[in-house]
Amino acid sequence: MAAGFDKNAEVYNALFKLGFGFVEVGTITPLKQYGNSKPRVFRLVEDEALINRLGFNNLGAKNIINRINSEMKNGLLGINIGPNKDSKEKTNDYLECLRVFHKIADYITINISSPNTEGLRNFHDQSKLDELLKTINNEKKRLKSNVPLVVKISPDMKRSDIDKTSDVLLENKISAVIVSNTSDSSREDLKNIQKYQKGGLSGKPIEKKSTDLISKFYNVLNGRIKIIGVGGVDSGKSAYEKFLAGANYVQLYTGMVYKGPNIVSMIKKELKELLLKDGVKNFNEIVGKKRSN
Image 1: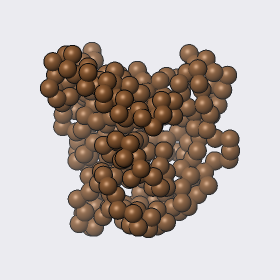
Image 2: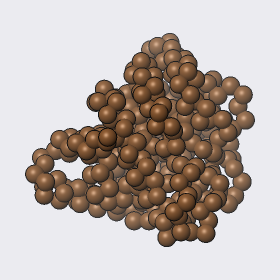
Image 3: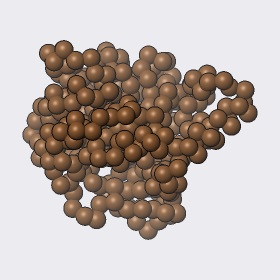
């Protein structure tokens, strides 16, 4: 399960029971915040998409860590962290969340890609990203923590920046990159009247965009960093395409909104059939087999 569904770590164990192999909660900020004003989530049914401008609404790091400590996790739990909306020192907000969650998280995702927090995507600048990750890694060392770090990127990033971004991720020993967050573009071909609502677009309309970006990152990273593929996953076929492009794991959110809570078992069943049909014994055999030009 991708971040954004279980923002306050309320239902992660229920999601494990639905068959999810890992659940990512958040995005969590140091302080509690309401987020943007409502309405802030829009269903584009004809497009099998969502647009959200939630704005990191959550109960704050200390409230959420207390909740997690009170209910032992029954699976692999990722914690997605970000800065408060009005924070003047965004880097310090990441550090504060790292301090709170590094002992309980199976991995921590550095969210630099939500389109709904002003200035957040500035961290896609390679020098700013490098400075941020070095500061976070220094704090990790000070905490004597081994928690894996993951970076979640935007599907709207310039393709010319992939090489430089990959270099920064490798230099800072990032364990995985999540490709990708929601898009604040990609609206031209949508059918629903609400297509120009401000916010991040998710679901089927960004499936190809994220898959193409996965393939490009895979060509550069070549297995040195794991890739978590997100964007339009709602079937065995769509998951299969993400693996072929180079994803080692996949996440979903919007797919469950439209296909319901049994989507995981449905995807696993369809994926197994596709693998058997193609004579594949393990999905790892197909990772990155469909390279982009």
